[in-house]
Structure formats: structure tokens, C-alpha cells
Image 1 (cartoon, rainbow, N blue to C red):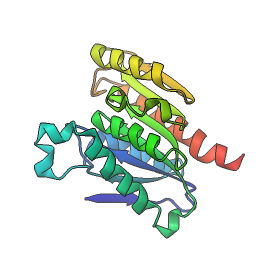
Image 2 (image 1 turned 180 degrees about the horizontal axis):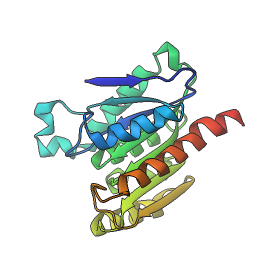
Image 3 (image 1 turned 90 degrees about the vertical axis):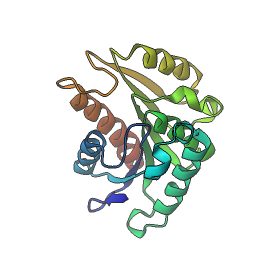
Length: 200
């Protein structure tokens, strides 16, 4: 399933890369998508894996495969007439964040911003130093192990970067106000790097 939403006059598009335990139907990712649409950004939600593949843990953590699928999606978005010339951002969750950063490393001149939500950027270790796109890593305060993995990845990034820890939030950001904070941070980051910088 592919869900493409294009507000009138959109000058930027955000492609979602879902990771393990998530999909294009995820209410969390859909909430982020809707907020980005309200900000004037187009969004593309799709599944990197088929339902059968999603049940195979080896494929869920096959970053090369996920990255290849995401790069194919980036290419397909480039063929959409309404998005011609739009700046491209990537929003990754869990292992999808590693795919997003790996794609940003491979297509450094095509990606203008990356946001990771509760992601595993450490799994993109071979490409982190080649990422040029401004990158925002968002992690929940209670997600101790993932915080450490994000801190390690953060130290290897050579681009404009920010690590944001959401107070009182766990891995899924289910606590009151946690997802709203994620949406606020992501919308600001993408608006800045996909829209405002395009006007400069």
C-alpha cells in the first residue's frame, strides 16, 4: 500500500521509512504525516517490506534491502509531476531510520533532511559519515538502550545534526504529550530544511 498526500503548491516531500513493528497504517506515523501536510509538505507512506517479509526478522534487520527499497521509492517520487523540483526529506522509525540514513548517504545530493524517531541509526554505521542532509534524532528519555545507540551514531555524523530526548517518553512515545512533541520537532525540522531554506 502506498499513501501519497500532496497539499496544493507543496515544495517539499517527506518519505516515511517504517521499521520493525510498524507499517504505513501506523497511527503514530499517520499523525506525523497529517501534521506535515498541514505545514504544506507532501508525504509518502508505504511499506518497505511485504506482510510476509515483515514476519522475517532477518529481513527486518536487512538494512541493505530496506535501503534499496527506499531508494526505489525516492526515484518513483521524483517521477510525480506535482512534486517536480520538490526538496526531499526522509522520516525513519526503528530500522527504517537506518535505511533513511543509508539512503541519504548513497543519494547525498538528493536528500535535504532526515528525521529519526526512536530509530536505530547505529545500523547505518557504514554510511553515517557520508550523510550531508541535516539530521534530527528523536529518542524517548526512558528508552535507555536506544539513547546510547543514538548517541554513538550522533558522534559519527558529520552533517548539521541535533539529538532531541523527549522527557518521560518510552520507545513508542505512547505517554501523554510524547507523540505531540515528536510531531512538533519533526514538523519544525522539515519545514526549516525543506521549505524555508528553499525560499532563501
